[in-house]
Image 1 (cartoon, rainbow, N blue to C red):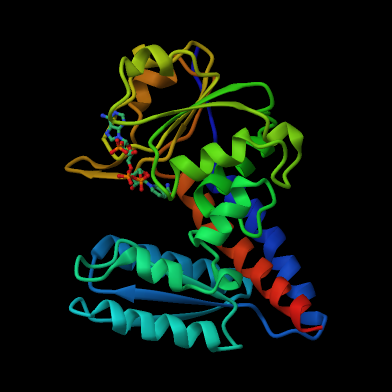
Image 2 (tube, rainbow, N blue to C red):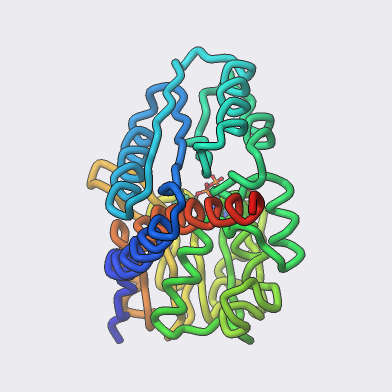
Length: 295
Ligand code: NDP
């Protein structure tokens, strides 16, 4: 069996065109176009590419973007001063702090300083708490993108065993919280999963991943998931982006697993384009929330 490709690029295009129409209606209603402010500290090459992609995606959707750059040697206080200024600026609806921050900056302190109403990455503890309680204000971009992709391929998660490999605050943990809830606003079919979270200390990982109806790999290890770790017919979502001498590869051994899975995301062209797209969704949502708060 050859897995059907979950075409993240196509789904992202579809959602971006819907967002563009919603942004146009928002502006026709007399509101300023939503504005996203990106904070980029230092010269990390991958971060520069990500920020540029985000700016371009904003432009296509009719969303304004601002780029605020600080030098590599910046202190936590300098980054905080910038974030506080953006929090206070009524012309800024969403704030994105591009990670990773340089080692001299305390990431947690900076992320905690973002106004929760402008927290379009949904990293602030208040937003994480709301997700955990099943009443999210914003959904984190990568997990939200994954659910949107599954939904549009009519792959329900209700009652399924979802195994997530990776427990980061950006992907693994929020993904688990979203899928284990009753309904996080995307309908009961796109929640209500039985979720297992695995990590580097998990014993006999393959025995657990082989139980997955839906396997989500967010590990950061090139081609780590092999066919022997996948149940025949499983849906496999590869979040990993690993730069190797052979170019970009995911956390899943694509060729190997494609013979075993029913659906599989490619890298690139899978989860990545959806992450950027859901940032646009959250920026529009932030503008709508802030507008509602002032009327
Ligand atoms: P982190 O490094 O923060 O987390 C990796 C997780 O994988 C950790 O929980 C770690 O366990 C676990 N892990 C590492 N090695 C093993 C192992 N041998 N067996 C089992 N678990 C293991 O990474 P992120 O979550 O931030 O990112 C994961 C990948 O996804 C990266 O390649 C990243 O580039 C990519 N990514 C892609 C995005 C996209 O849009 N497509 C967005 C965000 C990330 P432990 O906690 O025990 O250390």
